[in-house]
Length: 606
Image (cartoon, rainbow, N blue to C red; front, top):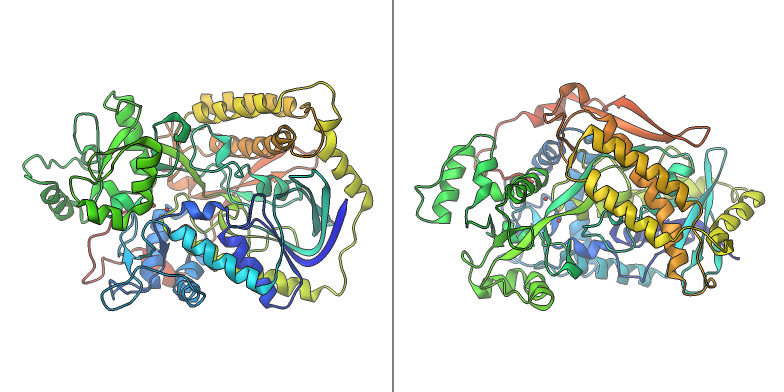
């Protein structure tokens, strides 16, 4: 086993992990960055639309208070108010900082950072680089981290956190290429491992998203929060099957794209709170203008993500779907070919190369895809420290900011704002410790044995079969629309799969053994899947990303948080706690009228 010693270890090298490592290093502590894949290949690049920040470059009326209000309302008020406040106040500085480090943004005529419309944001607020914003952000942060000389462990998967008496002391994992165990002894650990999308069959998430950080945190004694809040992005590719679920940015709709069913109808008008008819309009622009006058929103195609995803799902179930089981997203009839290629270059090439579809001439086929987890590790809103001393979390793996539904663009600013804060406070925590925390060598040996267990079995379950059955279970029983009976069935199946996963066996050695990697990944996936299903069964209402067909409306009595813990006997427990009370001055912002000069609000999400 390779052993290393650091003050701060950051697990995960997406936007949050990179920003955390940069900040910790700047504080003068020994910092390591661990990435499951290669440096730069992070899920942050999938966030194409932009970074939400109230810069006020397009609408001078925009400010942090309006951004705070949008975030809280989008999250159905289940957000932690303090995280929403910090995020809205600090996002502009983080975007300008990124620009100082070399990020190249699209520009207004005056040379300022250009901002685009996105669902749920009252003003055009997303700073962007065409539809490749996440890629630009990762490149910029990566170059800055390398410049600082941070130690990077690539293609390394962490398997278990080491903690003694409620205090973290490091993590143990393995090198994916060689299979060699690695122990990172640390004063503080920051989790930035992202979400859990690979527990579903159709997802925009890449293979790394198996919930490693969440499972490790729960096992180490940390609490998880609101795990039932899973977001299904309305627009993922549906054809060919090899790319099913691949993200289609909300920027397409933000730039004028409209949703249509197989009959050519703009069906979103059917799903607004009151049924308004736009049949007398001669053009789509007139229909939108009529809709804005009636509802004070720009277009029904930019309703909140959860609402759009449910509407698309309803159209497909009603038999009005596209040939491959989706609906159509059309921008060709409203924008010129030059405009589309300039504003949406990635989408143009994605459909042309993967599906043979020219989006400047014909519509895209899309359907909802599992995209984002609003729940995650419960953290202190200011420091990002979990309920375990020395264990911090930032980005998608941490809960609180987004509540029941994330607005598009808030993910990238979340990574920057809370990645920085996690790095800052983890470094300060590490500096306060006079010496390295003690390691329990018996725990280390036990973790190493558990790591090698699938390799040591000569016969057992096929890890790929277990993983595939889990994905089918989550897709069919814990999807966009949920019911109590199906959730109970899912929990029974997940428990049975967990038993099978404890007996997985893999052939071959440690080096280059994806079967072994899958056997370890599926354990984390099952832990996360169980927490989602059990939380979803507990919350008897529909709110944001969580829809119960048997409890179809939001219930004020359920404006509370669900906390997942690991009991003394190792069993998963769900408890209910009150939301933190919003201070009166911030509560007043949530009820204020539309500011003078504001465009009509849209609602929804990268």
